[in-house]
Every structure is written in structure tokens, then in C-alpha cells.
Length: 573
Image 1 (spheres, one colour):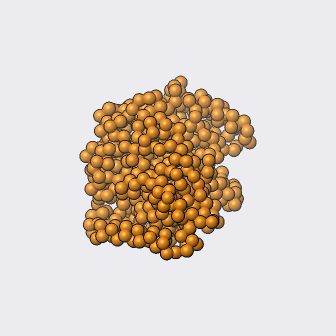
Image 2 (cartoon, rainbow, N blue to C red):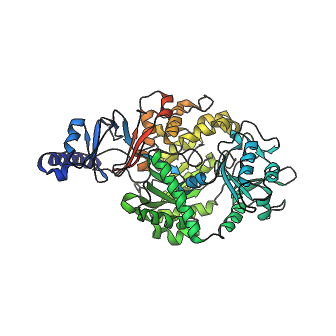
């Protein structure tokens, strides 16, 4: 039946083009936009290459040679000579954070700090510009990526003394680059009544020195203790002020996406309140990119409101809400990822289960009953095994062929015995190429060589087993730049010039598919986007170079020339 449908569709498209070219008036055959003299990498099932493309309204009208496509040029057609530039389907970032990315552009960026001293200096300079009592919010520090360890440290994390002395009059909250830990100064900890007697919450850890004193680092769910006080300070602002700040962060992310050739953005966790604001922005045409939203609420919130928020293709295919985000464990950098065996550099520690298994099971069951996709954050091998088990147990309640397309977000460290289960269960591995090369310098330190080689970012092992991998950046954890991410995916080359088990790197076309059609598939949208084919949405990224053929290092020098979404030029360099 499927092959018959494909043949029927092909015949229909051919017949449709014939009718357009021979029997209709110019008003119905002329395109709104024509791109000529390019190399069009369609990413269709045959990886077809074309010279030119015609677009009418928001849809691809025709692909072919320059000679063929010129027939669609009418008096009102906008025509662009690409001068041998490369066209690909618009990048689909399959895992990133919409509001977090915008907020990272609004707050203190610590990702460039080379060591703890620079972090302290940057925060102190910010404090000098603020009134006493105002919060300092920053993000991006990572103790494993500094050029020197702090003079005093616990498990590699600095103690708060220097930061507290530099900021005596302002509470400070600095998010780890991974988003899975925070650093607070004495002012913030005093506001939260943190003491030696404060207990670790479920799914979280307060890092302490040998005498039991909190050093300022709050991992996973423990960060909520400090965030609670910060959120109380926000309650002093008006609803209008809070809404405007939220809208500003969303707009900043939108603008960053179109500059980087991203046309669709899978947002890994949004609240009902934030979703209402986002919908308002889409209604007023303030959003260019297409958004696939994962609801980030707990079970109690979801069970009463899930159906209310479900929507597919809202606002001319700019908003779809049909998935749920769950956290199984934490991150490797902060030792929150949950493992079957202990960390090599902390033999008594296995990581953390951040959401109770009972709640995860309840959410997964709720999702299945309401035809929602589940997207579960799992980084460690135990975290991955636990969620695969939960998925399998729930799927067994349904008939064979039910189209779950449930996902594991990150799937960074797998036990070899679980690799084939992704394909067997139809679970999509939503992975981020840039995490591999960014984390590589400390992976072996955390896990040892054997686990690193056989289970860390095993893209080829997953692909060969038949699993689908979609790609993304996890922004603001990493840069939203898709070309840097693509480079990491096809080279696995670190900043110091080393290669991290390069036998697992993707081929150029595998990487491009992971960033386009696979991302569309992971959102049930492969019939309308992800490849350049007649009848699909005209979501297009134009690049200065052919990323399928140029030498590796030239990928990083490739520029986005145009970003086109639904036939509209949203960005032109």
C-alpha cells in the first residue's frame, strides 16, 4: 500500500506540473519567488540535486533545471540569482530551549570565562552597576572547561568565599553551562536560609566541604531552593513587565535562529503560562520560526490540562504542541547523569534520578492515552535503560504498529546492550553533535576508556542498528550555530585538535539528514517539511558553500546567506 501511494503521488506531481506549464494562465503558473543557479540538495529519498526552485505562497511549486524553473517567472515574481550557492532544507534544531536561549542573551554570559577568577571579576563588574539587593543572574560557567582548577575546590567546584566577598550587597545565581547546577553567593544562600542543617531535596544535592558547609553549588533539584527566592523577587514586578520580558527573550531567540538558518525549533520544555504568551506572539505575527513545543509541567498539572493545550499546525504551521518533556537524570559535567556503574573520578557516586520513577510512569501512561509524544531527558546509561524499560512496558499495552515515536533527549551514554533497543522500540535518539566534542575532554575522566569508547555518543552504532537520530544544539547549553554543530557531527574533532572516537562520526549526508528530514520525522512533520520536494513548505537555508563536499575546516567558515520560511525571506546577509 505504501509503495502504491508513493507511485501515485509521483504521477500526480508530474501531471500537476504538466497542467501548470501547458494549460493555465500566467496568473496561476507564475511563482512568487524563484531561486536560480544554485546547488539544491533536496534530502529527498534519492538525495536529488537540482539547479533551481520555484515557490508559490508558502509552498514549493517546482524543482529542476534553470530552464524549467524560468517558465514559472512572471511579472510579479521575485527572482534571486544564487551564483552557485548551496540550498538545503531549513535547519531543524531538534532540541534547544526557546526562553532559556533568549534569557542567556539578556543576562550575564559566563561561557567565555577561562577560570574561576574571571567569573568572579565578571560578576563583580556587573554588581558595581546595580542597586543593593538586585539579583545578578548569569549562565555558562563550566569547571571542567577552565584552564586551571580553583585554588580551593570540592570535586572541582570552587568555594563561594571569593565570590561572596566580591558581591556582598547582591544575591548571585549563576547557572552551570549544562543548566543542571547553579552557583550561589552567601547573600543568596542567606536569603534561602541555607545552613549546614539544610537537607538535600529528592533528586538534588547541595555540595558541601569536609565540615558540611555548603560551598555554593546546588545540583539538579537542589537548585530550586535558590530559584524559589529569585522567583519571589520577580513577584514584585507587574504582570505586564514579566510578560514583556518573556516576549523579549522569545524574540531574541527567533532572531538568532533566522540569522543561523534555523527554520524549525523543537523547544525542550515550556510551561502552560509561557505557552499562552507564545501563542499571543504567533497570533500577532511576531514569530518567524516554526515551533514544536514540549510541555514541561508535572503530572498533576498535565492530567487536567493536557488536551486543552494540544494543537497541531497552529498559525499556518508555526506552532505544534503534542509532546511532553520529562527529566530522568542530570548532566555529565555536574555528575548528575545516572549510571549503572559509579563515576571513575568519584567511585561512590552513580549520579541522580531527578524525577521519581513513579511520576515518570504516570506521565508516560497519560501521554499514551492522549496520543502525546514523550521526550525524556536521559544522559547516563542507567537513565537511558530505565526510560527504555518504561517505554517498552507502556507500549506493550497497545497493538503492534501504533505510532509512538517517543524520544530520548541526549542519549549520550548508553550501555551497549541497549543500543539496538532504540530501533526495536521505535525510539528516536534526539542527540546533539556539539555535546560530543564539547564534553570530550572530561568524558574519559568521568567514565573511563571502555565506557567512553563503547557507549559515548555512539551515532554510527545507533544508525547501523536502524535507529533514527535527530540533531540539535541544546542552546543555550551550546551555541545555537548549526554549522558548528554540523562540523562536530562529521568530524568529532575537539578544540585542541584531537578526535573523540571518530569511527562513530556521521557521514556528511547522514549529518544533514539528522538536521533536516530526521528532525521533521521526530515531530511527525516529514510530510510537510525536512526535505525540498514539490508540495512541501518552502523552508530553505541558503549557504555560501556546499557542506557535503568542502574540506572539514571550511564548514566553520560557511555563511548563511538567506533564511526562507514559508516562501518569505526572513534573513538575507
